[in-house]
Length: 116
Image (cartoon, rainbow, N blue to C red):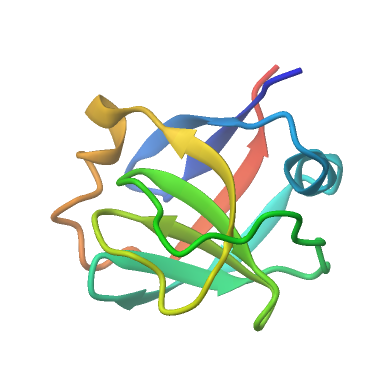
């Protein structure tokens, strides 16, 4: 089952789909999250309160990709760069929506919740 989430940055909100994998489903069952974001290159990331297992960490994430890193328990949003180390790809923002984030360098937090 594919779950949808809302990423609310305050100034902009977008939807994303989570994959039907064990890590993605575990991420979904612990919603909502409030994540303080850091910005590095074309990536946003921030710690979440739980540890999610990795099943298939990869080194290339497509633009708009949502990922989890066990290094720091980080939730990551990739906007066109690859991760510094392998991460678990847990979901995807559509191309038209992730491009809305592309030139925003001042996003400081995101609330992630389920879409009913």
